[in-house]
Image (cartoon, rainbow, N blue to C red; front, top):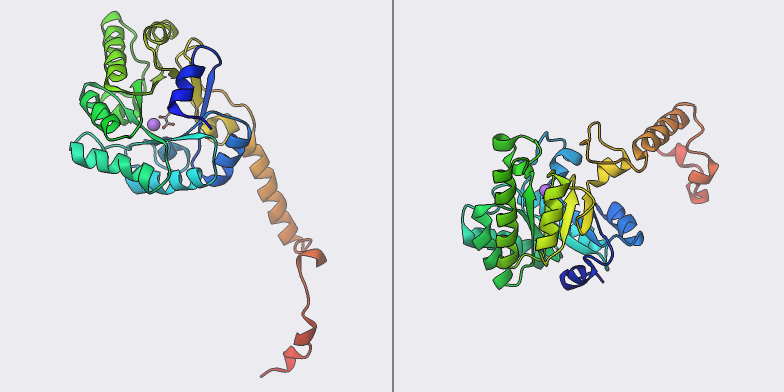
Length: 272
Ligand code: KIV
Ligand code: NA
C-alpha cells in the first residue's frame, strides 16, 4: 500500500509515478499497473467535464469522482484536489471541505494549489490529520491572473517558488507538485527539500512525475507541450462506436446470442 511516508522513502531511490483519474474503471487499470499515486485532479474540468478551465469545478464534482476512484482502488494513494474557492476564503470551511474528501469519499490526502495564502492552511490541515500535497509553479486556478505560461523563469520568480516550497515543507506538506517550471529550478527545489517533488513539465530531476490521464490516453483535442501521449484510446473509441453504429444499422447486432425467446410467452400476440 502506498503511504505518504512510503513516498518519502521512495523519493530519490525510485521515481514516483502519479496519474490523474476521474472514474472507477480507469482507476482500477492504473492501480493494476502499479502506479503509486492517483490524483483526482480538478483538471477534470477540462479533461472530462467539458469546461475550458478548472475554475467551475465544484466540491461535489471532486467528491463524487474521488469516491469512484477510492472504491476502485486499494493499494494506490488517492489524492483529491481542492477545487477553486473550496479553500482559502475561510479556514474552517477549507478544513471541512478537505475533511469531507477523506471522511466521506475515501481520499488519503488532498492537494492544494499553493502560495503565500496556503502556508498556514497547510499547517492547520496537517494538524487535524489531513495529509497535504502542495502545488507550485503553474497553478491553473490562477488562470485569470497568470494564464498558462511557464513559471519561475526569472531569478526573482524562481527564488519566490523556492521559498514557498520550503515554507510548505515546513508547514507539513508530504509532497509537492511542480508544474511548468524550468528543469533547473525543479532540480534545485528537489535537492533542497526532504519531501518528494512530483513534476509535470518540470524536467527529469523531480522525485516523481505526474500526467493527466486523458493526455496519456489520447482522449483530448489539445494537450500541453510538456505532456506525452502513450496510447490512442481516442482512435479506438471512435472505431468501436462506428462499429456499433454500423452493426445496428445493418441488423447484425443484436444477433441470436444477444437475445432469447421465452417459450411461456407463445401466443402473446393474441393478447388484446
Ligand atoms: O488537476 C490536475 O490534474 C493537476 C495535475 C496537473 C498536477 O493538478
Ligand atoms: Na489540479
